Amino acid sequence: MSLINTQIKPFKAQAYQNGKFIEVSDASLTGKWSVVVFYPADFTFVCPTELEDLADHYEEFKKLGVEVYSVSTDTHFAHKAWHDTSDAIKKVQYVMVGDPTATLARNFDVLIEEEGLALRGTFLINPEGQIKLCEIHDNGIGRDASELLRKVKAAQYVASHPGEVCPAKWKEGEATLTPSLDLVGKI
Image (cartoon, rainbow, N blue to C red; front, side, top):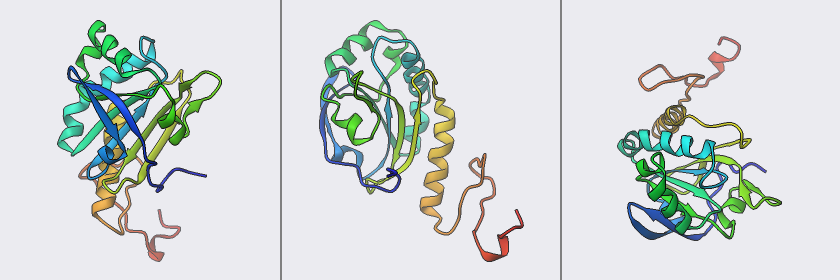
């Protein structure tokens, strides 16, 4: 069963953000757009490149009213230690959620049970708490924050323009489509 258009499941977790430990819950992800990015583990190889890329684009996400949450099965203490020791991770200002019980990884169906680690899963959640984008990669394939930004803009456009859809490679300001009988077979 697909997670698309499903409601996020209840959870509570400890997180690290900007020098503080905070609690994050399903309620934290409602009322605004949220991006939840799962990655395998702190102190690894591809993960810091992805989190740094997200950090480099974080202001753009915030301008769109989107909060970013990175999640791994490490603890919030490990996130702080990584933040304190890695030049790439020192750039991170968004929330780094600890999921040592793998509750979130299971909720979002990205847990590799035999390893206790998450796959590279990216989820866009609308203000109502519904998953609107779900993308899961093999752990050897890094993601691109600028492509995620494009998808966020498309999802926000579709949400605010009922009856319109965004075609492939759509970018903000470009033409959209209005599905109708007249378009069938003409694109």
